[in-house]
Length: 176
Image (cartoon, rainbow, N blue to C red):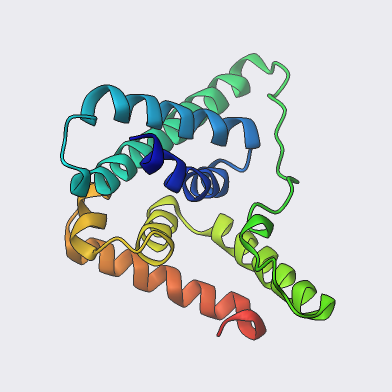
């Protein structure tokens, strides 16, 4: 179980960070997802772990969005101090860059592409973000992604198609 959680923690953190735009919130989301996963599904076969974990993480992120929406509604009425937001965080995709880059120019190019990708991913609606991250980064099947997101396979394909179109339109030179 520990090896499985270790193998997915970095990617799960990136997914949560892109969704929440805040390091502490992302860490909380991943930690809570891992705790719930271990508590409820440790006895399931290993082949089912990945989709189950991402389903839990997806639910955590969706709940986070709901809580944020409710908090922002109350802030308008009470006009209290806003919670500190960290929209200007370090690039979470830098850790995923190739450490064996041959030249500094190549590394700079990779970093710029990763930063551009992160910015565009943050502008996508949550469902498109999740479909893209689960299908393209986590390499889940369409059926597994549909189970994680709690929607039909056709809906996953639609969200992914829209996400890829937006990424292509906005990334231009960086998109392969």
